[in-house]
Length: 131
Image (tube, rainbow, N blue to C red; front, side, top):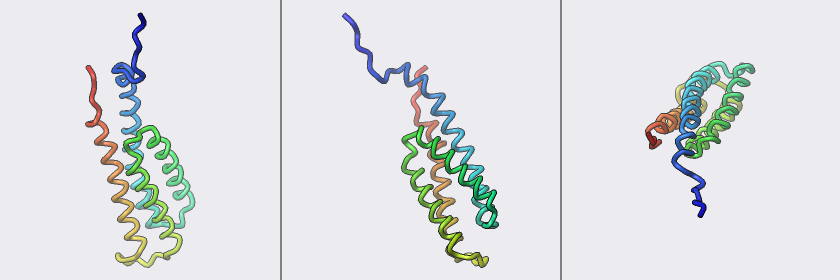
């Protein structure tokens, strides 16, 4: 008699942990870089090369988040806040005021970045490792 093996076995999940760990670690590191670039972008908005770099980072983060479904909600939040920030930068000329709409958008976006980074770091504690 043949024994039917489950599609998701313990050995299969153990093999996938390094990939998920690596992905979460890479995403957390990329979020650090991205946050620095967002700070630069909001202080020197008309830098086309920097905007292109930020766009590439968003694309790379999209691929990494696709591999970690538990991060889909904070990823969507970050993506929406990124679009709102870019829209705000395009439509509101800078005037250096703290209450400026772009500053509020940036603050909201930084919270989204931190939330996603925190979820990446929590990813390591959520995995139940089998010896």
